[in-house]
Picture 1 (cartoon, rainbow, N blue to C red):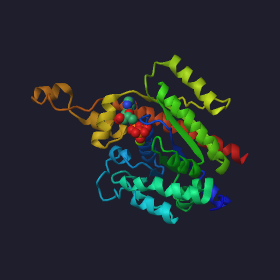
Picture 2: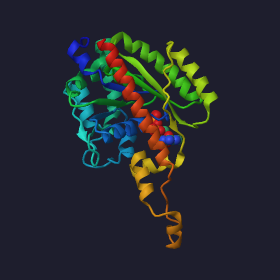
Picture 3: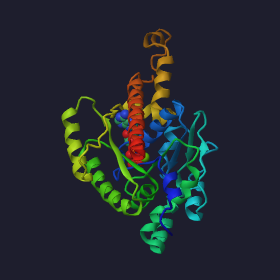
Picture 4: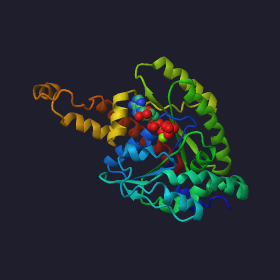
Length: 309
Ligand SMILES: Nc1ncnc2c1ncn2[C@@H]1O[C@H](COP(=O)(O)OP(=O)(O)OP(=O)(O)O)[C@@H](O)[C@H]1O
Ligand SMILES: [Mg+2]
């Protein structure tokens, strides 16, 4: 297996791996909502799900629908080198996905064999299957599993950018240090990989002292001067999180549903006060994703204009 050629590298310039070695830090929530938010704004977005649990299918409401192939097509592409093919996410214009799922249970074993055969170049397996597929899309986001070095390496081998969500607690930061090690190794194989930024997830908007502390730790782990922690963050809301995953709706869609529901007083007068209500906080979380989308587009535009200068 050879290094990427120039055409392949260029084809991957809008690929973002969303990764942290730690679980539960918002990788999937961010992939789903960032993708859907940008698609709403008219961008054409492709999501690639490397997770066997495939929470992305829950967050976007396509689990067990006809597009949900449990990761079969993705596994086949990795095994045969066939170009990846994304399918449209029902009900969401401009949003496409290469689904993950239980078939990806075999992917780690496949990659162990690849590494034995090709060494570190095996990291480029996904890059090669993805490069011929990227042309129609403005952005490709890869959702990665936690605690799976081989699959994280696959994503880092295929990406131009790393976006790392973290919670502000110790666990997310340990995961970050492990990821920083994989990042350094991936850059030897995929030199165009760079850190786009770190997103604070599920945090209180007011915790500025904690945010400053995280900023310092991120800089230490990745060893870069400029602070990679993005200004945009995803505020904490358990209710929005639960509704989103249960109903398969994005924060924007939940906010619209919350605005359309009868007022609490109307429900009470009609005698339906025990009916579950969608939290109006969804609009705050939706606004967080708008800001995140905008900041990411600005960072990409700045990087691309810098590269041309
Ligand atoms: N705004 C929010 N505030 C608090 N918790 C949230 C928020 N949005 C989502 N969550 C919850 O946080 C948990 C972790 O989110 P998510 O599944 O996106 O993380 P992950 O990094 O993809 O996890 P894994 O490593 O297991 O794939 C989920 O239970 C999710 O419902
Ligand atoms: Mg996930």
